Each structure stands twice: as C-alpha cells, then as structure tokens.
Length: 489
Image 1 (tube, rainbow, N blue to C red):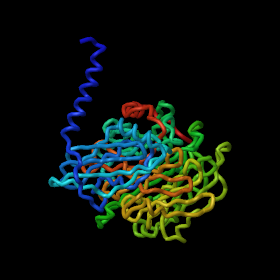
Image 2 (cartoon, helix red, strand yellow; image 1 turned 135 degrees about the vertical axis):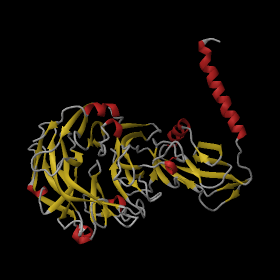
Image 3 (cartoon, rainbow, N blue to C red; image 1 turned 90 degrees about the vertical axis):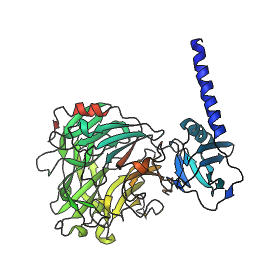
Image 4 (cartoon, rainbow, N blue to C red; image 1 turned 45 degrees about the vertical axis):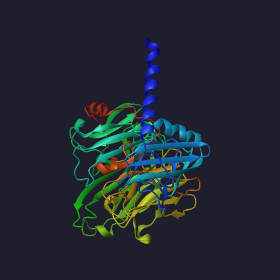
C-alpha cells in the first residue's frame, strides 16, 4: 500500500467504526412523554452559553440503559445517541453546530431508555451568543478546608475544549503554599502569582519572562496578599495582611479567617517602590481587597473599623470604598469615598471587581468578616457605577457560598466559585451579563467526563479569565523561584 493511501484508509476505518457503533446503539421508539426536565447533571437546562464554550457533557441520574440528546436550531441539528446514561458530545461536532447557530436559541430534547421503555423528558433550551468568553481560565486546586495545602497547584484550562495543565505545582516550589494567579487586563502577557514561605515571593510574568519580587518594605505588616494590576501594567494595588485562621464548632462554617491587621498600598513595578497613603494604613481600621478601576484613576478596596478579635468577629463588617490614584505622579488622592456603608446595610463586603468597560462593579456580601468561603449566606451583588443602583443578582446566587468572581475582557461574562452543588467543593460557574447589566442563570465549567465533579476532591479557588495561553510552565516557575528576589522600597 502506498503512503498516500494510508490516511484515506484510516478515515474509512474511523467512519466504519462510527457507523457500527451507531447501529448498535438503541434509538427512541414510541417514547412515553414525561412532563419533567431530565434528571441531568450538571444542570445545563435553560442557560445562556458562549459560542466558544466546550461541549456541555452531562449524565442522567438513574438506572438508564441508553440516552439520546437532540439539539435543534433552525436547520442546524446535533444528535448524540449512546448506551448508558452519559451524553458526551464530540468537540468537532459541537463547534460546527454552535457555528451554525450563531446568536440563536437551541431547543434540546433528551430521551432515555429505562427498563425497556423509552421516556422523552420535557424539552429545555440553550441561548447561544456570539459574545465569546475569554478562552482560558486559571484557578487554584485546593482541599476545601484550606488549612491543608499538600499537593496544592495552580492550573490553566482552555474553556473551549478540555485541555488543562499546571502552571505552578506544590512539589516544584519546595512544598510551599501559593496564592492564586491574577492577570493584568485579562492578558496572558502580564500576570502574577505569589509563592509563600521562606524564600518565596511574587512571580511576575511579562511576556513569558519571569522575575521574582519581594514586595515588602519597612512599616508593612507582611508582604503582598491580595492584589490587582493597573491598566497600564506598571502598578499593582495590594494589601498587606496578618491573617489568622480559626475553627468553628459548627460544621456548616468549618473555618473562619480574619485579619489581625491589614493595609493597602500600590507598588510601582518599574521603579520598585511602594506608594503609600495614611488613609489606607490607619491603625484603627482594616483595609483589604484592592482593585484598580479600568481607567486606572481609582483604587477600590474594603475597609472595616477595628474590633477586638476574635471575640467581636461577628461585628466586623467591611464597607466598599474607593480612593483616587494618579499614575503619572505615583500618588493617591486625598479623600476616600464610601460606596457601600456596612453600618447602614448591616452586611460585609469583599472582593470588589470592576467590569473592563467600567460600568459595573460586582462584589460579595456576607453577614460579617472577610472570608466568605464558608459563609452559606455569601452572595454576589452588582453596583451600576454611573447611577449607584444595586442589583442583588438573585438569578445568579444560591443558598451556598457564591464568591471569588472575575470578568471576561468583553464585560459580558462573569465566572465565580460556588458551593451550590454539594455544599463542600467550590466549582467555577459562568453567567452571562447583557449590555443592560442583566444576569442569566449560571452553568458550571464543562468537563470531558460527566462524572468528573462526582469524584473530584479539590475546590476550584479564585477562577480568573484570560485572553490567551500563558507563556510559562510550572517548571519555569520552579526555576524563577531560584532567582534573587527584587527588593522594593
């Protein structure tokens, strides 16, 4: 056989295998109509999805012998027929189908064979939008109690398919704990992660060139903990925190973390100096969770008056604040604005993040404190910056912790960590935000194996969206850890 004929033979064999499998798989016949949605996991019913998302693979809870999914939008049709209870959609077919749909509604019908009888469940829909989500997602995989960090790692996942890799690994950085990975303006050419412990430091990525930074100076209570880039990439706003973990007797809370002391600063990454303001390092207040506005003119942060800890922890409530910043002068403004007053609302704010278009600010609200992960009442809320109007985002929130959110670069998608599924493990959920600021029902990050979340024993912590694949590996971070850290003043 000639070499030129070999590829043709391979394609014929693949096609033959598909035909054989199709012929052996039962198809619906005289189905019994069921007035309920299919017992589908994950729940992908009636959600808005981006046209570049990976296939929404799912399973049906129950003892089913075969399953068929039919998705129709105009002339576009996608049909998957399989034995067992799992629907796994080939990536190529899925992408072709979504390309045909464009901006449009998809009607989905699921039928299943149970004890020799086909059942056709109530149909649901997918609203497909050509507003794409940023194609890469980074997150920290960690045991859910957070006081254990063995085998901790940072990962990057392409949300357009199922490719995933580690970008920082516990075993490669001296068995140290690490903070999460943060992008500058969702760009893969500018990002940072922080490796804790002796010999640790902030690992700065500039177009794949990694450097190790010691972002600490005299008078600071610790190094950088929570941080975010300015739009020009020259500055980062960061908090310096002394963090105290405590354990609850109540199992639904498990772990509490609070700041014994915390202040906010800005670091100039070119001149290697710390920019300070007495308004952000007040000994009678705790300041934390800083984030730049997309135009770089403001630093948003959270602030709480000092209380006696841990005895008065439940009285510790953070307000949402902002202060001006002049990048040219390298200086803060001389006054602080309060956008959400904790003493008026009786709740506590954390993790403010402004949409890249500057219109919306999403934050977490909880009853008290600064660690909403184990607070069941933790919800997301949205502030319209032009008018000061707020939205409780009821369609997004659940009866469990919803927090640690970030934006896609087009301001149309929000990803956040939620424990709504099993009340224990945080998972990344996506929701669409339309041009009027209205949110849609969230859906969990699709996985190749529909059973993945049933057997996964790590939480997805602090999911962050990026526009491109990061230009470094976990081994590059290992090598960067051997550098002498650049000091700041």
